[in-house]
Length: 595
Image (cartoon, rainbow, N blue to C red; front, side, top):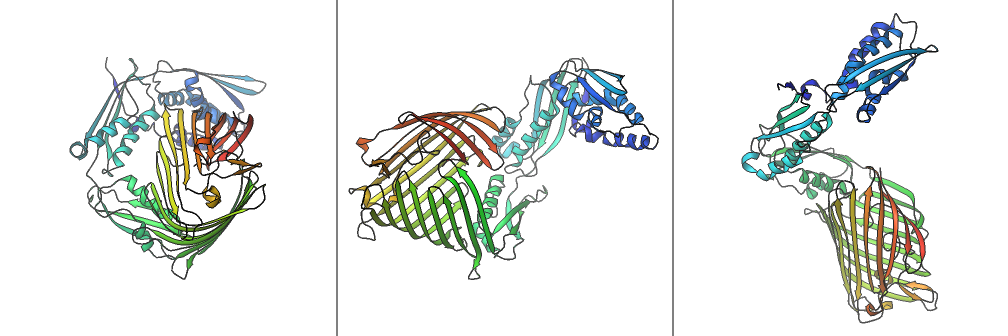
């Protein structure tokens, strides 16, 4: 059976139809506007299958203009006459190429009623898909060619839709352009429609073009702070093969410094000059002085208020100085820090001091700290080395408060290997810390401290997700836990720990005070189902313990259900949990990824 050639790009079906028809509609409104003293008032009823009814209701001109009261009689007649063609144009984008359309107009009580009846007919199905590649990718990187083929989301037997066809082509193009082949383009594209057999044969030819390499960084927009700050955090070396992940890393590295409000990177994609293509980076700088503040609420800590003052040009040498604080119902916290700009390897050196008062579970901890640290953020890895002196005091229901001091060299490491930093569905986040103190070296007791926390995301199909969390903390010492600064010990319980139990309520119970302990282990498994893109539900099981003696451990389990919302500012979790040991129900509200 002979078919006819149909190219959606050439037919401009990719363009919203209301925009494509707008010149004709406006011309009609102008032509009839001067000779139309009477105005038509009408409503529209669309009788069509569910698959196309919403599309017609939102984009059919006669439906859209029914909301206006300035449509003249002549304009109304024009809209009625144009309706069959408008319907055919619209439903063809969903793969219906032989619709039957009937338009009936009746008048009741001086008001017109328009009924548009649509039988879209059989839907066109994809009969074949042919993807062709030319350019350097065919000889240099067949793995990337295969990855690009895999990105094409339309398969034989799928319904043909214009949006699906366009999205599939663009996905392949993005896969090619993401690494090496910045100048990749669609060379030819055709959807050949057989209207009698209701079949579509799709074919696309992609030209990868040459491999691009990256050149030197050209920085603009720097006025207040030295341009070498950007060079010091730039991870890209001239001559590297182009990779969008490396460009994103550069942007993230520059944005993570305190100096720049926005960062824009432009890479020249001229296929005639692919070698060491220029990297143009434009920044918008923060002012020297800044004041930030905020309020919030969490079920663990109640309402809180926080603020920070920063000055970014201390000594006239771009040294950031910050004073920050936070007040909530369980903790009062203040910190002062003076940092240096990043050095030539991206490391930032800083000195700091802080004071924290924590009052939870009838236990009050006063912790004063001073120290120095050296930190660096590279790609998905954050590393910090520090030397901190702790001076802690703990009070409880029993008399005689305890004090402990320690000078602690420490190392911390965070890896974020996830597909989306804000709403992850695949990958993991791992945190590890290690530190130690030696008695007599500004420390009351010798000890070693380890802590690790891991989150693993496992997608199940398109709408389901498993989230696993494991956490361990241990202070290894031959002396009592009272000889270690209390802020370095561990307790469990709460929204980000074991749900179903009060915040930090799992620990060493002494006369009703829950004291921090040497060892802590918690774990969680959660199943999420997303009903829409933004809203989902969850069921979960948590378990954990905190103890001074591992042989005396008692695990506290909790179960519950919750709601999940992908809000504009991050993930919001609302949970109701039941503690199986304490037989209590606890609501939990958290904003952001629990870590």
